Image 1 (cartoon, rainbow, N blue to C red):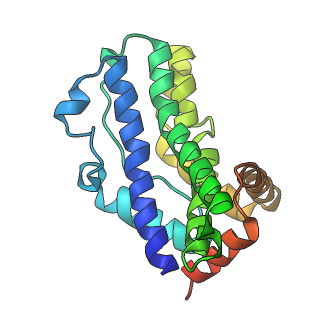
Image 2: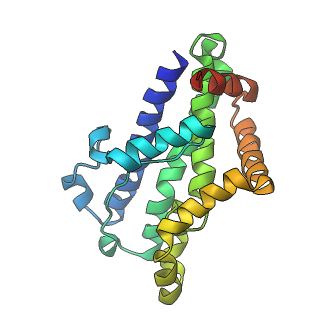
Amino acid sequence: MTFLVVIIGWIFSLCLHEFSHALAAYYGGDITVKDKGYLTFNPLKYTHPVYSLLLPMIFLMMGGIGLPGGAVYIEKWRLRSREWETVVSLAGPFANALLAIVLGLVLQLTPVGSSSIGPGVAFLAFLQISAVVLNLIPLPPFDGFGALEPHLPMDIRLKLAQTQGMLSWVVLILLWQVPFIGNAFWGVISLLARLAGIPLQLAGLGMDQFMFW
């Protein structure tokens, strides 16, 4: 049950994350996102066999980290201002944060927390927090950099853009291989999870049930 709750919920959160990027872009001036089919919760519109399915599942199974997978192509030149570029980038993590808060309220105010799906819901909420923290890292290709990029000098933007494929792997390796970085990362996530009303023990149980192997 927990495995299904997490997988189905994660696919939904992936769609919500990318839908939020697209919706912000639509109101910011890029109306082409509607023609591309991004203003929908159809996961097929955001699916890439490697980046949307394989990698997120690998990272979930390795250590319970919420790695967003899908992507929408935003024609940034259509956006009205640099501020709108920032809004578009932050819309995805904001959606994950909002979902985490909603799930936290559900766990606190309804019988879900004591039901058979409670561990899965708690772990899913915890994953949303991890996705927010990971996405707000101010390095490419994460959304945190996307929020800063329009306000940086062009030469810095170009240099960082050339390293985005490598930097994402460097960040993930550091999180797993350098203890004080990993501890700080998970410490921030745990703190934010508590603030969102997510029971950490229940989330830990959900993670154990999800990673049944």
